[in-house]
Image 1 (cartoon, rainbow, N blue to C red):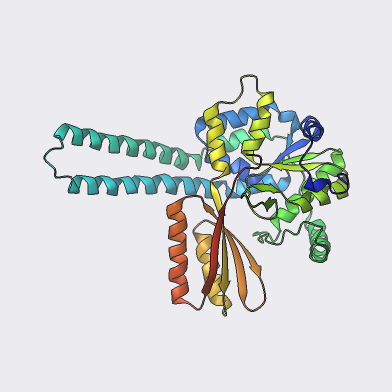
Image 2: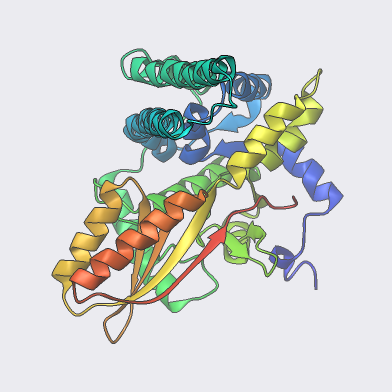
Length: 368
């Protein structure tokens, strides 16, 4: 029975060994783009690991294209983050200095407090300047480019992809045993990104006759099944379809889990501070589910535009009776979530959009 329903079973020790010995390790764009969010030490460690296992790694053309297309967005978000924290500290310092009039607090202590504020702001400014310089002189992109030199797949032709898209979307609607990729957003070039990526993975396994280990920090339902414990497990449909089409194993890790296993390749191991930082990023997003009722597409389009302009990924499902289901990926930070919900409520009060339900799930690494 295990052979028939293999996708529902955890990998055996033999299968783990097979994947690590024979699989091509493929990285999603979000994993590589996280390089801009890591500390310098963590990025250096991550890039060293990739260099050590360079004979085992590969990325589809789709991933390489997304890294180049979205890197400036990530850099810009980092600049905004450090700038906003500096401004918050400015306000906090001014409020503190204006309200502290107690004569029992010495001038020396007040001076030291002011110096502390200034030192933090100086460090934030250094980080902000670092990212501003990356726009023209991007050593992170250079490192990634060197690591994956001649390890990039070929693009699907427009005709090849369009033919595949028509055939596969119809098949996936009718057959629930296939991965749907139904929440895939349409990219600027008219391609369904995740579906294209999926078929590049299958094509690679077929041509090289080997398993694929896919590393992603994505939390969409296309890739993961959410258990009651909020732990994300690989989508059973993906595992089934991949094996059916290639005869090879397919599995997914978050970056943290990948580094845990990669420790065996590293002579000196990986510093615990690096693991903790990567683990933090592995649970640094939350998926917000919103159910709304909308009678006018004009207002819905404005809402989608507003969310997109704020820099958040959004995925839309339409249903009957003018009910729309939205999935939005937000940073796992309380004030950002609260600010987003307040903004949503304000927009709803000014339009005919009725918010029926809002919930959120924080991502967690598998096998954590």
